[in-house]
Amino acid sequence: MSEPPRRPDPVDAALDDWAAVRPDLDTRALEVFGRIFRLARTVGDRMEEAFAPFGISRGEFDVLATLRRAGEPYTLSPRRLSATLMLTTGGMTGRLDKLERAGLLRRSPDPHDRRSLEVSLTGEGLALVDRAIDAGLATQAQALSALDDEEAGRLADLLRALTSGTPG
Image (tube, rainbow, N blue to C red; front, side, top):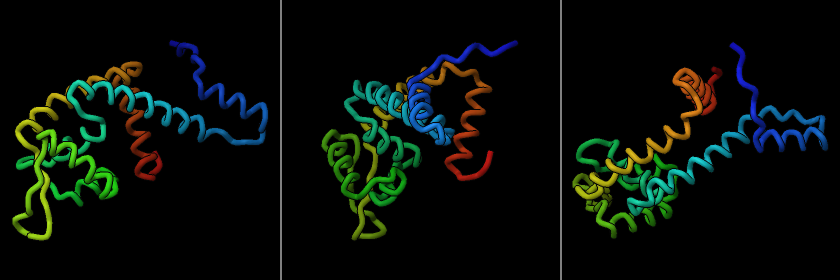
């Protein structure tokens, strides 16, 4: 069975432009990363839309989801949250402030180190993140629906190889 013809996308147009003005360039990386960047932006926008009904942004969801994934008692230090989410302490503080005001998490002294804090999900935060993850995963599944399970698995493996720095 032959593959269906490829439909050109905006990255193809950029590649054609570069080929016309700089035929000496090797644009293979742009073929991949141009599409990754476009896809990340598009799906990121859709994720923002999916989380909006819950009153949270994608970044705020990431904080809540990181605490949820930590398991009971859904508690981490602000430093660990910052490291996991690759955020500066200032960026993390702003997110924590907003989520705490919304009653979705609480900060309290670390019982093992009086100089430190712990960040914990509240019951309301736990319920919200459990509903929001369903909406987020449905959004991602819809974006991935152009691929069958085998293709999606191959793509995941290839992206893992890129992010881990190991050859596929």
